[in-house]
Amino acid sequence: MAEPNRYRPGREHTSRTYPVIPPIYQTTTFELDDRAYEDIQGTGGLHETWYSRFNNPTVDAAAADVARLHGAGQALMTASGMAAIATTLVSLLRSGDTLVAARQVYGDTNDLFERDLPRLGINVVRVNAFDVDAWREAITTHQPDVVYGETLSNPQLRIMDIPLVVEAAKAVGASVVIDNTFATPMCTRPLELGADVVVESATKFLAGHSDVIAGAVTTDDRALHEEIQRRIITFGGAMDAHAAFLVWRGLRTFRVRLGEACRTAAALADQMASEAGVERVVYPGRADHPDADGAAGRVMPGPHGAMLTLVLDGGDERALQVIRSLEVAVEATSLGGVETLASLPFNSSHFNMTPQQRIDAGILPGMLRLSVGLEGEEVLADDLRQALKRTR
Ligand SMILES: Cc1ncc(COP(=O)(O)O)c(C=O)c1O
Image (cartoon, rainbow, N blue to C red; front, side, top):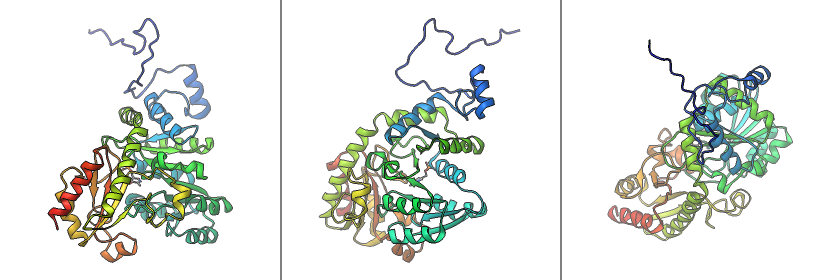
């Protein structure tokens, strides 16, 4: 008979080892000891490391960094941004409750609001995210349990007036959940503006390298944090250790990456504003942004993010020609990587709307969305110029 494998990780060292970089704890389970048993019996196992769907040290390393970015005491990591959003909402809402939510939200979040939450008996009321009076009226009328919106809308890049919506929500005792994926904690820290929970697709700027699907939930409310953690455990949206390592690794350069990408996006916006063939640029830092005199100062005083939307002459057909002529920026969905990504709302994020519905939602013909990466302002400006020229 072969010898059984008696290898016990960590026990092979004669002295303790302190790695500089968090090891990838690619293990589903951990040896049980008295502390683990005590925690399992006391809290259901929320705090000790004994099974990776509950806790894993590599996942904890990523969570600690996300928490720090939001100035929070703790955060939770999830398998995707949608896991973060869905798990948070089912933790906060139960049958008979009411959610007042922005109309302008990410497509799958919209499906959750229109299809899944109503099936659970949750009333969902939608409002125009950029109309503070509409928020106030809906919140006063419907007395919701939860209020939900996104810091920056896609692709209009309008800014939600978080402090004013929070004020209205607090007056009726509602919790406020903000999807901060587009703005990132470099530009906006919703907890500091009074929000209760921040949800993010860490797939995007947080991880930053277009190589991992991941989510994060951050709240300073310890009890709520544990409620959400319990739902991550029961619904199974836990992050895997390898994904956590990639997020942690990406977060190491978050400030440098984002700082550079925001500077490039701002400069590119200014260059493109005077370019022939560009009808309009939409960038939150510009004086001609529709929220420049309102929410921008309160919510996104600067830096102003790495997302930039151009409205091109010639409508969607021209935008399609331009995007196909780009040589540096990559035509792809998603955002937040080190490479610049370009996409068209009409055939990707908002394909299922009619042209008129898109116009009514402020998604204009010829809109081209850029997630600005690290190639540099001149390289990207030249790329856009050659594409505009070729398609004139
Ligand atoms: C604003 C926003 N929220 C949530 C998500 C969902 O994130 P994930 O793809 O990581 O589940 C996305 C994805 O594009 C997004 O753009």
